[in-house]
Image (cartoon, rainbow over all chains, first blue to last red; front, side, top):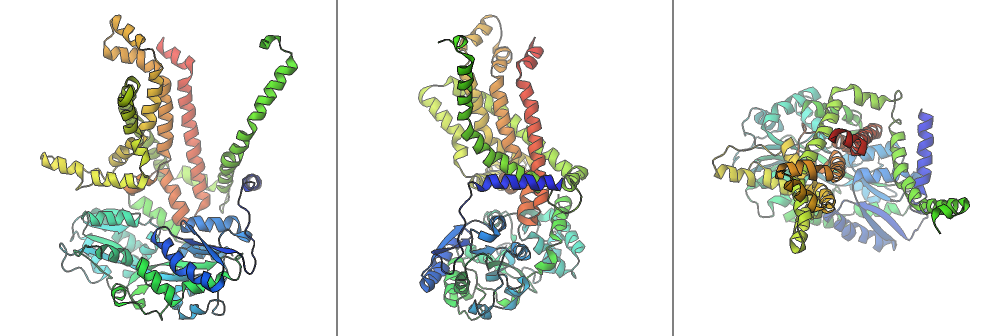
Length: 344
Length: 286
């Protein structure tokens, strides 16, 4: 049966590639390189801060394609020898998957000198096949008009929510959100690392959660319309909301730390060597400040000095934790299934 | 020259010429429709373990069977909602003329001009605990309604956006019905309800079936509205597929669910198509 399946797949792929894009020739100095960016202000920042740096240094044009991680991973998988993307930005899990499938090139400080300025937690867990340019932890945004003294630690917060202390005025990330499974791991860490306890706590919180949110925009809508007083949310997005004339909203990272999200930049294996220079630009202090000014997420280069108005909103390296994605990746299918079945 | 007088060879050549004209369309279908379906089908066997593992997982687990049932039920509920609202609307469009007709058509099609995410956020504002519906309700002294994150809210939002498919399908059929048939029924003693039941409904049956097929297939393929307006208990097959692709990265399971959804829709369409057969309808109207 598998043979039949393979034959049909090959036949179908042959048919489909008749109209497929022409392969990009991998030479040392191509006319352009293709890089990825999330839409909106992310793409604008990539063009202004990263692409301009690369073009100035190499004379090679940069084409920015927008989309999202899973879509780009699929494009690389479909054509690994002639990838339509040269430098790809992937989520933590997709980067691990791409690395395990042999789709990415390993970087060293000789190819990317600025890598030396990036703390190990932002690239070593991915075997140096990817490096994060920014980081942003999940913390708590709350309505200070309703909650004057928010709990100091995650544990106190979760237990307080489960006890109904804040009423049904909470929004929390869903276990099926892109960073939902890592956040389940993070909750488990507050209770000794037992995932069963994390699920028990989440089930106890459920009656007081207006929605386990699936998208950040969905979550912000609940908070902005004051349907919830407590929102577990990303720091950069929270400060962007607070600084837009919402002084009643406050943000903090409960003790001991906050789980961070990363965006991993990788050179695709079939990309020309000059693509390394793009990643070096991404990690350069100038580009990191420029990017932080636009998207309000701090860069991972530890030598960067930010203006005071930015620095006050940035969570220091010491207060963030990167989940061990290489360990939890195998557990994600069962956690998602468990979430679907138990959190109904 | 009449067809019967033409030589057989000329008729065959004309037939071949017509068939050759279909080649570009057939090629297009093979490359962009059959090809991806075959890829999806083969992908459903690409996972580890025994053959049909993913399908066995779907059809032996009560949770996934429940999700399939919920998907079909939502499709039926939205189709019925669209039919109940769409028939009078289709009738109004069919019988209107000039500017009123244009205005009605625009009003019906307007929801399709708005992006699905923006439209869903609009429904959040209307259906939320502090939304317009509950604001009016509390002003009238009524108890607050729980519409958000329930099947009710999802059904309302989907009926809103899919109503044009039903209303326009019915309107196009009603426009072709001679108004004198309804008048004749009334002259012969039928009241308005019986004229509708015995004359208009049977004659507009094909519009109803067409609209139902469009609404049902669009509903069972929806996931953005359901993701934004629902919660973990309002799970449907497309949302599970989305999860498997974006969070779990289990392509084999996602492909198996995709094939299951396709077979499910194809089977239900086949059943619906049988309703359209004149023999079936005549047997039940005689």
